[in-house]
Amino acid sequence: MTEALLCASGYRVGAYTSPHIIRYNERIAVDGRPVPDEQIIAAFERVAASRHDVPLTYFEYGTLAAMVVFSTQELDVWVLEVGMGGRLDASNVIDPTASLITNVALDHCDWLGDDVETIAFEKAGVMRKGVPTVFGSREVPNAVLRHAEAIGAELLLLGRDFDFAPGSDCLWSFSGRDVKRASLELPGLKGAFQLQNAAAVLALLEASGLTRALDAVLLNGVLPGLALTGRWQAVRAADADWLLDVAHNPAAATVLAENLAATRGAGKTWAIMGLLDDKDVEGVAAALNYEVDHWIAVTASSPRAIAADELARRIANSSGRPCRISDSLDEAMAYARRNASENDRILLTGSFYLVGPALLKLELYSRPES
Image (cartoon, rainbow, N blue to C red; front, side, top):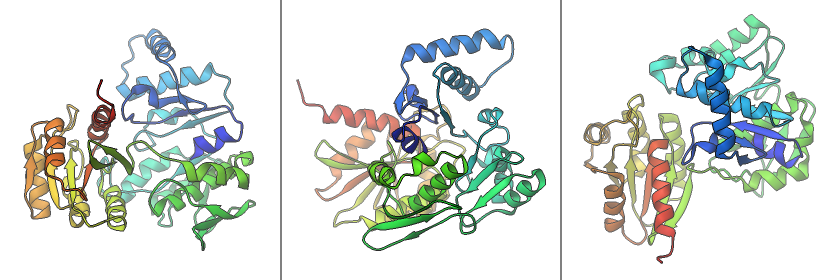
């Protein structure tokens, strides 16, 4: 949302996001377009030449490469998505004009901690003294409040410093400290929580002084048309209805379940799932279980993926229903397609390392035969 609104309002914008769904270039975009291979390769070469014998992780290499690319593009704004946590994340070497923490939920627990307050402290590490940080949820962990006070950060809270309200006729309104906007059209991204996200983005833009992006006509021209690859994405291919959503933690799976319930038709839902070994399998499966009629487990395309047989065992134990083990994503998709009835839908979920490869396969399904 931030990138799209800034680009549409005439700013030159670099956006660094992760992970990618299909191609690495998605991570580094300038003016809304992934940068070409040669720019990324040149940036990697510059990082390699500069690091001497300092070891870098995959994410650190990529973050530095994005910064190299952006530094050569005469940009007005850099939008940097934190990879994991905040306090120790590679993106945190940049002192921001303003920051946004959307919410805090249990994820990456092996690295960040096994409770909300501990994870919140890690995320609060993006704050700076005197710099505004928007918190996008009404439930604010104490760790965020304490850290903001301790370092003198300017914390902007939903319900106190900015707010939103759903209206009639599928419209909504936003109120910031100075900016007020009424009769806004709903964001194109699915899920009721996207209104909360949109309000947080508008508060972030106001706090950053980028108010050109808050023009009412521009907001209604940009937000309703937004879509995210691999997030509640519907594809019609091979005479079947496919849904793709990278719901890899219980909070995201709960939102996905709500969307599935709101769109349930006469048919059944087949769920093909792959997850990495640091994810809460039981929490994800439990959140989705009431909306899934048939479970299929696969090994996602990552060395850190949970093996299909182990994933199936844990899904079955959590859901109380059988889960099929598939040897490959191809086999899982073919099995679901073969057994799904006309009104059924096939959900691909759990990991970027499952949804990305699945999208590539669906692209192949959709191409006309030569």
